[in-house]
Length: 289
Image 1 (spheres, one colour):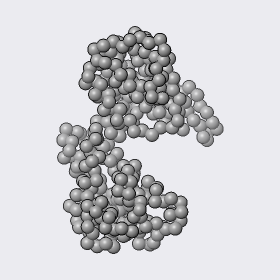
Image 2 (cartoon, one colour; image 1 turned 90 degrees about the vertical axis):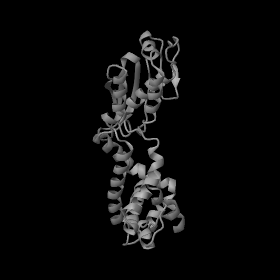
Image 3 (tube, rainbow, N blue to C red; image 1 turned 135 degrees about the vertical axis):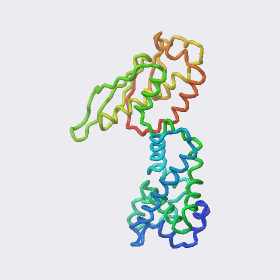
Image 4 (tube, one colour; image 1 turned 45 degrees about the vertical axis):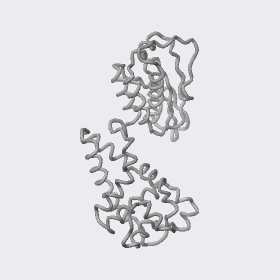
């Protein structure tokens, strides 16, 4: 294990290398593992990220700050940071975890990264830990939109439609499939004014609604971004396929009017909102009248 390489990537040189080794040790490897360091690092991470957000987004209220922080410190975010550092090559795992691919498991990599934060705190104090966390999160914060990060697809769709003074979407259960203990719900999402009708499926009604909402928002955003401001879209008699996501027919007059009066600013907002659609959804079915 090249400990010097890892320390270089972290931007911290350990005075006590034993702390570094313990932070990298999974409980499957030995009794001197990293779970207590993980507990400590989790608290430090939350504190530092809260401080960074407080300084960076001075006009954001407490509720939005809490939502953004929760998304920045969740397992998936930590896992992605660990992947960029190639942290998996430094893990100390037991034989069983090695054989089962534990070095690729998001939970193990996220926990190890938190343990490293705890180890740095014990090795050199809070300022050292804060500097390491800041350096890892600064590239992420450049592209963070605090008004949308962490909001689910239904919320984003609702806010988007409200901003355009369009009635809220309608959700209907159109079918259920599978045995009672393993049902799949097929949900219809309708935005009548834009003549959008899409379908999403999920293991629960809520999951199906989220899938359908995601497709509806993507369809609305695509429709908006493809329509030049101040110009009416030309009627079409055939259907248009939107990147394999949904099918929409814009020959209806109400649809043309809904999308033709958007400004360049609307298009920019639409593109920014599209970047926030990171909700992972099950397989979906789609269709537009």
